[in-house]
Image (cartoon, rainbow, N blue to C red; front, side, top):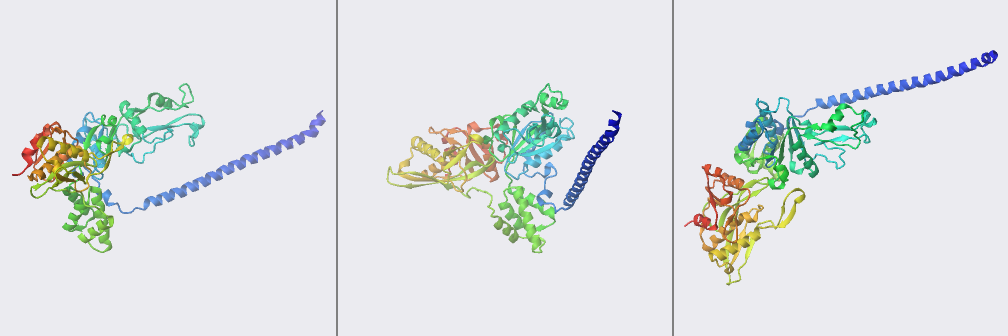
Length: 542
């Protein structure tokens, strides 16, 4: 037996030694490969880091739009009333959610950011020094109906999805906070909030109510002890999301969901006036140390509809001047910019210089609650008795009504309103409508809300039938019923502001639209009326 072990023991030893060497070589080779991969990884990482540093060292000159960005609330031009409301809503003890309406390029984002900085300085404000301003653009905010990713509300990376990492390998769902949680303790600014997906909007409203984000996952088990305590806490109590919402939009108020509007204070930023554009152009010129001709400034103010457009025009004009080795921006250079950009002069309807038969100043609202003067003109042509007809031109034949999922198309109501007016004039004032061809026109191509132009149409037609000129410094708005009553309309404050801008002295509005604040207006008289008679008694010139 001992001879057997002595004979074969050496062989077994050699076999063991052989396998030990093979296994050793295997692990040594594996370790060397790992070290080699690690070396390659480090080299690649250093290479990419060097590239990134080189990219960061390359900087072009700062755009003029960035140089002219407001640094304080005093730099936000033309929005004094809107900023005061924002201050009242955000800088006090109990800040409110806000929706800011206004055309693009008037300072909505800058104002919201600067108001937060001012609120931080108030010791009574709940906003702390580290309060964040989180900005989200609703037009590009991704929404996945499978809840895989939601950068606004937050989502859960379940273990089955790629990139779940080591926790995913262990079967642990991983909550990922969205902008709502990142804005905790500060402001969540959502640009173009009206473009949010309806599902996201509903979730956002729930977050505003609960001030926390509740996340769910089919892979979460409250009895699973492998799940870390903080993830148990998140699924049980939610992610904190106590912030104040500031939503900006270029839409009309009625286009936003009522549920959102009911939770927010509404603030209106008005379109910039020519004087505001001049100040913005002056600031931009000072930033680039250029000179500019007065005629060039006037041409920019005639075309620029907002501050962003004005700054872009100045930057383009300055570039042309530099190429031509000039140190001043001339009118010719500005005209090149305007012609190349195909800019359209800003809408600037003015009243007639003298009272005119058949021409009345109406008032309309377009865009983001922007008021404008609306000229309504009428002419009556005698025809064979009983053969007269009424023609309405200058109105949009079809208009979209509502917003979001409730948008629908309807025929313009302007022609229907004109029929109501003709009925009133025929029945209450004895006008021989059928003896005339009546042509009503709305010059300028402005979208017309038919009912609210009722009193304007009635006054213009009555004027041409009776050949009485209409006071050119008076404007009016209101719906006319078939009984001759003046019914309430929307956008009255914006309409009155439009009348003030062009220097009118009196505006007739429906009595149901009257506000006590109108009594304090010193530069314009606001007259409430209940019936069409009250307008006819005051607007015609002897």
